[in-house]
Image (cartoon, rainbow, N blue to C red):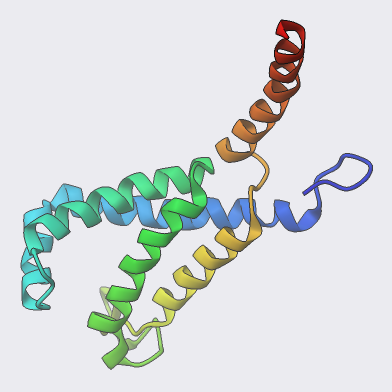
Length: 167
């Protein structure tokens, strides 16, 4: 959204770091699954009784990697946010919900450093709320979605002029 002076409203700029951070998080999780092999992730999905674990592992891996990159670029933010939200909601319900809210469980500090226990659903909620904010916030600055919108708007008067001159 722009103000009357043509400048971007601060609230739309606030979406840029959120979009970049969420995108990076998803992309890195997808890359980690790809590097370890989606087959290993499929074993986890099979243990959780997720249908079609092999196909779901590949779909989730590619969705997180591609969807994360799309979020960082600001491309198809709303359509990408929906399936990413489904992934987060599934992880929340199937894995993290029984562990409670806390995203960090410090078990001990040893000579090797901090040791952590199982992670609760706090991080899943943060991702879900971030995706919701992006979907509700519209096109943010420095995004492919915004650039495409500006190009379409610029092309509309030219198309209208061509139509009126050909009649």
